[in-house]
Amino acid sequence: MEKSKTIDIGDRQFIMRVPGPWDGCAMFDMLVEYKAPFVPNILFGIKANRKTMPPETLKEFMKICLANTFEIILDKKINVIDEDGGIGINDSSGPLFTKLTSQYILFFTEYWQDGKA
Image (cartoon, rainbow, N blue to C red):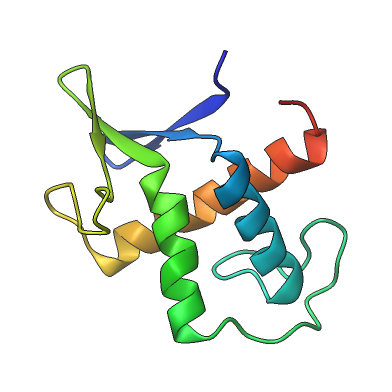
């Protein structure tokens, strides 16, 4: 059974799923090496005396988070980010992507710390 989390942002509903092993390890590495964007300064028990995530790394990090996030529309899951890295939903914005990414980081951190597949 796939672990996932559903969240509401305004009148929109999104579902987040656990990333595959490659993306999960890449995310963990980025969160350990850099300050986590958009969230408190401590993740995985590590204080945020790490460096700021460079823009290109942040963009790649966000793409991993958002590729594993779907909007629920009429009982269908719509990819927030499609396979080509393009935006797959309507009415997207920087603030929406920031909220989704921060919620995804918290979801991923909880999943990773639990250690259960």
